[in-house]
Image (cartoon, rainbow over all chains, first blue to last red):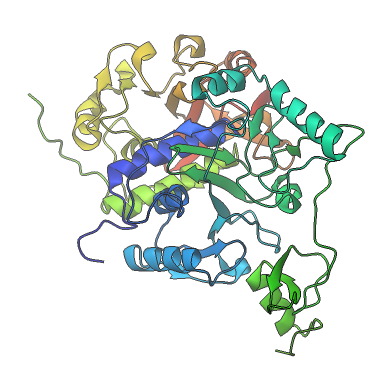
Length: 285
Length: 193
């Protein structure tokens, strides 16, 4: 694309972001500040993830972008087009074929490999935000690994509701040291964070933070011995492909209360249908 | 007065910096793994192409750089191509370029609240993949791995233990030899085999 550097960002910006990424990897789960740039998308549309992707992307990469698991929603389509235009990279919707996957709020169902990098779009990188509004105080709590407040929050949930009432953005401990936000992925996806072979990078554009989970790093969802962490999933099978192990979206299909559950990961669902799996509402592909 | 050095930097500054960074990214994410960089880079003596490529990729006017006196002949090249602020004392540097590892406890190690301010040392080694053998374990490694290098110095394991004891504060190492690189982030445990 004329008039722009490869992958939109200028080289000095990329170096700054690259240095932040390296420090983020060296200190797993720690939020590294960076000089987030204004992007040609508004904050909240994945500017942090886009800046991380722009800084790592090369001409040999194959990029996949998902929004809540889907390749065909507005955010995913526009980010994929953005990099197709500014970097000329190949794009794909197939999880297996991608070398870099930028995601908004899901981890693909297909197990990722060591040659892939997963880039998360993060709206709020600070897991203590709702408990401690002061950023200075939050930083001190991370410095001291003082996370009692979060355990009290979980305890209060259990005392009040009988269970931890967090269904997404469920806080995790990374490498036994840092309390970290996994971004608003469903708690269902949390177990996939643990010792994932792929490198995981997190970018928060508005909040100007980058953090990382290196491959094969211990990631534990916070819980108690007598209230172990349990990922939630709708008790149904995908209506299109019949999958019983994937994360499901509930879709309203008429104005008489009709609804169906379908895989949130569109590529996974399409792959299963192509392989001959059919759900109650699905037609053979 | 600074004269333009005879040797160029990257032939393709954008693509070569990206390729080098991806190698560094992988090296940092998987400690001790060795990656090829800088094919065809004409490095100024006494720098190896790998260390020169690391400088071109990561160092710029935002990063105060300390250069070991033995590597002073490369200073003009670094100043011209990286535009780095060259500092006189290691304590003031966010990046250090050396062939002998400076005492780690004299370098910037960040604070508990901002451990990312710890320094990065670009260390040019005499061998990578052979030499003294170490056992590595920590984030990025599926299982403990062995790693070999020559030039880390006799007291390295003890110095690294001290560096790691202060985690999350600490110093990270980027290792270069000839056209290959590896990295030891502060999170990795190192023991001699």
